[in-house]
Length: 128
Image (cartoon, helix red, strand yellow):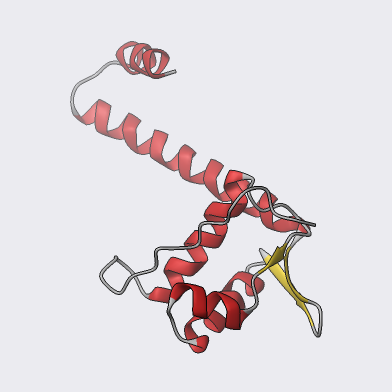
């Protein structure tokens, strides 16, 4: 399958927060979450991505290994690396969990600030 639109794995920078391989992991997950990569879509080879991002092969390989371990991508010897069927679902599930955790924290913060449940609900409705 062909990806929709240009992929945006970069920029990856030593000046950005987090190790370079984690920045690549985040970038791949972002591309999947945005719909620019779908299950079955091919990813660049480790060598091609390393050259594109100006990082070492080891860094790119480590990122791909982590993504594969998490079930986001899979590799086939001689064929390449692809987005796993479960990859998009796992990313969506993680994002929903993060949203739920953020909302729970907002409720705790609001209560600590003296807001009533009605105030919190009204504020949420305004945000929606």
